Length: 292
Image (tube, rainbow, N blue to C red; front, side, top):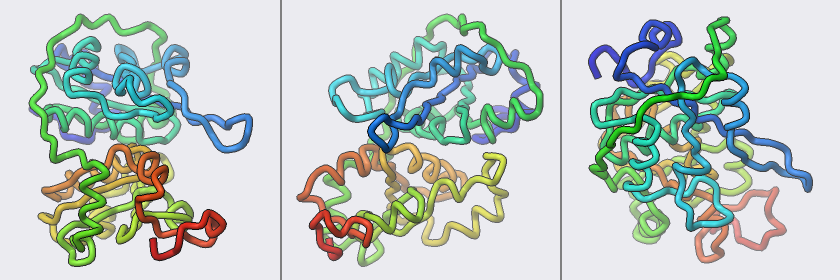
């Protein structure tokens, strides 16, 4: 990684923007109100076109970086080959260094960071505070698209970094969560967790990892928020594997050694009545018992 940590500051990025091996990618996704209540999730390409960090390309988490065969899902995991092909088209090669960021004080970039780690690429970092801090500091923006030539990114997958429904289900059925062999962390906010969560999960909201500016909290604060054996198999989940990736990112920085993101998360788990749920008062009319 040379002089690049897995979490870099705006000062560091400003000083290294012209490094020939450094690829900067905007990973913004936008959450908008839906006409019939609720929300919808759309590509951040329009925001990227309106202004991005100079030289940055646009990493489309809802498009090229997703699987095309799961209609109705957002950001489903692609194959390693599809992901590497899409990243290579953005100029990411085996010898690159990558800085990822997003806007709107979200953690979409953490999902792309985790996917890079999943395919065996470790030369990546998140921009602490993302585009919001960059612009708040009066740093320059550009509307020019990236012109980086395509490169080859070779997949060397680490399948243990992504958990699936069957692994989570087995951990519940076989008592691995109850006996502490597997730890399950719900990265959604406390209200969502109380409304419904997977049995045995504890709650550590990804939003609580950030301060008011959108930066990650100081190291000592994060250490205090994370207890437990650093070698225990730990699975993080949320609504669709994004917030959970931020938790996994921080736990990796803190020295936890066996972390996986349940990438499909509640968009898969909650849709199947065969999967047990602990249901809180807000969802009691939905018929699933509180024991599930």
